Amino acid sequence: KPTLLWLRRDLRLTDHPALNAALARGGPVIAVFIQDDSVTGLGAAAKFRLGLGLAALAETLRAQGQRLILRRGPAREVLEELLAQTGADAVYWSRLYDPQAIERDSRIKSALRDNGVEAQSFSGHLLFEPWEVETGQGSYYKVYSPMWRAVKDREVSEPLTAPADIPPPEQWPESETLEDWALGAEMRRGAQVVGGHVDAGERAAQQALATFARHRIDAYATRRDYPGEAATSDLSQYLSLGEISPRQCWHAGVRAHEEGKAGAETFLKELVWREFAYHLMYHTPQILTENWRSEWNDFAWTEDADADAVRAWQQGRTGVPFVDAAMREMYVTGRMHNRARMICASYLTKHLMCHWKIGADWFRDCLVDWDPASNAMGWQWAAGCGPDAAPYFRVFNPETQAEKFDRDGAYRRRWIAEEAEAPTDTALSYFDAIPKAWGLSADDAYPAPLIGLKEGRERALDAYAALKS
Ligand code: FAD
Image (cartoon, rainbow, N blue to C red; front, side, top):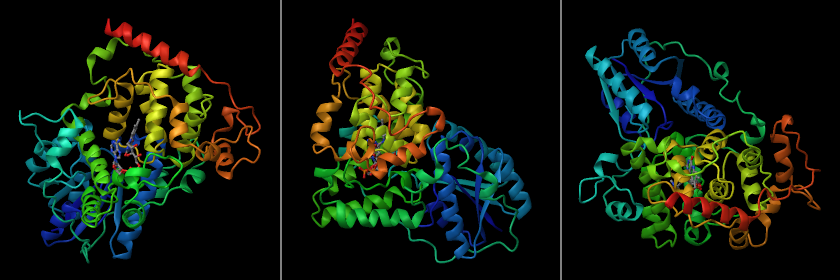
């Protein structure tokens, strides 16, 4: 009898334990992707990126005489309908860790089992399951460094190879099409522009890892903080959709470490930051929506997401070139460098004193690598209210940061067209991507700063002192 492979954030064939287990049952395997609330609720860029990922996976499956079945509706209803239509007697999937997915998946698992269907979940999205890493006191890690020390020498098994053959069913169930789904339709910006910066799918993911391991990992530790350079792995969008597994990335890092590549350990550490974020989300799901440290609930954040300052920040018009360059980079490419994310998040939450949730929501809507755990942790870290966070009194100065990490100004010039003698094509492409309604033009004057850096810093520190007292 066939097995349904319910795909979610595991759009790959290599190192896919649920797929391998489905194949081990011996019958046909039917890969299904369901557009339920978890998909309709995604931000515009993530949804658009998902559409590209599904198209790439469907193509890979087609080349093997397989298909990707697309259905819309509540997952349980869709699965039950498919079980009836295909005669399948098992549903396998890779585990997710956000509270909505956990609630949905456990409900579905017990309902299917009650009906005699074999329902099983597998690992695949993380290196270490959240319940497998514990402190000496039997709790989860609230601080990153001890978690790194606890896992760094653990045995991580070798990635599974992609199956040579996935047996198809005798008859395919009906499928909707990606054209019907139009997952890019909500992109306020030119989907074409963003699409030009994205190479989706498992093959592209493996290429990104290979390029990184061959050319960039050696200098990763020393160059990874410079937003103008292509020094990082660019793997986040692939990890987010599971077009590559963390285990494949981990083993590439371990091999590079054994070859004496200097940046390899730093790369492994970053992969563990991702694990840390997921473990925190699993154990304290309120990290997604509430200040992780509740003493921050009385902080004088602005919570008005429509405030002029918020709009200026979103549009890359704060008058602080490093912040504006990064915000524009995200709008056009769907990505933003980690150092730039930290600076933009610090500027919004400290200089502008806006609630981190406003920023997290905007990132959620704009990032092609959006990931609930890393985004929430990143924002709470920058705002100072998260676990193992940057202390609030340590306010990033975007000018000093620019002097350090964009000394020759190349990154800022790449993204800011106003008042430039010869604006770069990249800077001009921002004006093709933004909605006409914003009323912005490359011929505008570059805006004056929303607030002086010193004044903003002092205002934030005063508010912090008030909170403390
Ligand atoms: P590399 O430097 O090559 O790192 C390798 C991998 O390690 C990354 O792909 C990522 O999976 C992981 N990683 C690296 N840094 C972090 C980190 N700080 N936290 C968690 N995992 C990390 N990352 C996302 O994937 N999705 C998000 O929505 C997201 N939102 C963020 C929001 C803020 C405010 C901040 C400060 C960080 C956020 N990050 C997020 C983390 C980080 O910025 C990105 O993972 C990184 O920039 C991706 O680029 P890369 O793949 O080239 O990273």
